[in-house]
Length: 112
Figure (tube, rainbow, N blue to C red):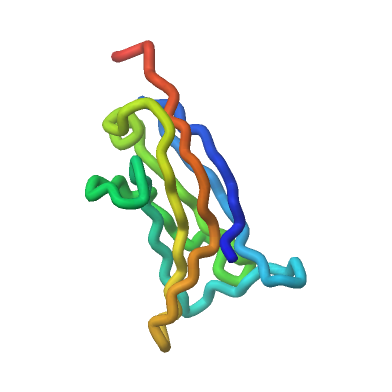
């Protein structure tokens, strides 16, 4: 079962957040030999998606960084969105959702 984690992104700002994937016993899940994917959508059935640019930043520590450039965050309409993070085992193709939640995009006021 995925961990639920809600996040806030300021539109027009660079966003970075690091999440740690853990085993049921609380130890770090080794992400060696895994890939990661993450998207933001308005609803579960929405055909429009924004990639969260996920990268595995420390495989043995189970760390994944989600990021958006200022241009990417500005392109997402303010409001409540949904997201998840999935990992895929390279050797057998098994997919597991590890994090999911709500992304709140706050509107940008200053435009340079």
